[in-house]
Image 1 (spheres, rainbow, N blue to C red):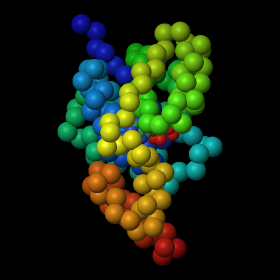
Image 2 (tube, rainbow, N blue to C red):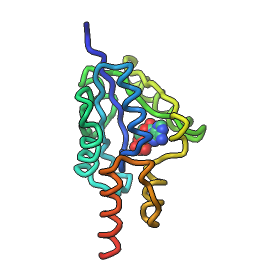
Image 3 (cartoon, helix red, strand yellow):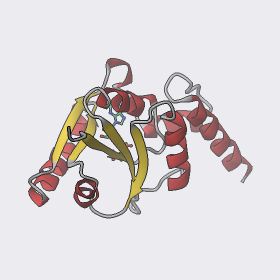
Image 4 (cartoon, rainbow, N blue to C red):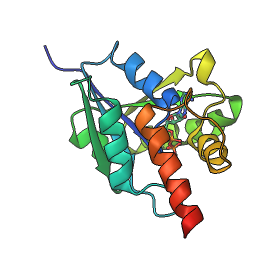
Length: 165
Ligand code: ADP
């Protein structure tokens, strides 16, 4: 039988337990998941692409069905080249909806085979985003319940290095 493959694209700056929850739930539906970090020059990031890839790889090391990759350019092209044509996106508050709806429609009109599958956030992660985690960590708050252990260490190091600069 043909493998069911999906792509989970995003910035992952850095990966949080909210992202991890979506990854693990996707594995219940798909045989293989490609977590794809987008090169987005317009978005200022805290971690480099290489750092983000390394943090994701370390987080999903126990799941051989998850591949970690990066992509430039159009998501539709990247996804269909990998034989996937299904993209997973997470939805938190209503505020996520408008932008996601626009993206899904645009991608579908560029390639009618392209589908976007939305997963509702799990209750404990509804308020969790990479941005809020960075803000809390930059102010010295405790983030250990919200991110994988390696990410907590990386954030602490990033902000202590920045203070020394
Ligand atoms: P982007 O910059 O593309 O939105 P993110 O890394 O912020 O990338 O998010 C990637 C995807 O994961 C998006 O679909 C986002 O809605 C989803 N996501 C992020 N945090 C959560 C969460 N706590 N619960 C569910 N989905 C989430």
